[in-house]
Image (cartoon, rainbow, N blue to C red; front, side, top):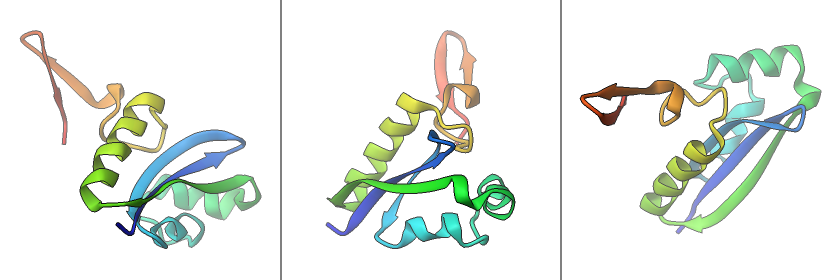
Length: 98
């Protein structure tokens, strides 16, 4: 039960939702994130980036499921999977790219 969900805000707008063990959220302000978009923000306008832990004390499976729900509800621009922008419609059924 040591997993978290975090949000990244840029100019007070949610741009990314992530999950992982506590400390995972630090990648956002490191310049070494797996997300090129977050790195770009870090190097161009770090003062307008805010990271908030929005859920904590979760199991890994709880964190992954809740992360998915948060992403689908808010559709942050830097989350590439699980948003309506990345869904394909095939024969009236929806499938995620990932």
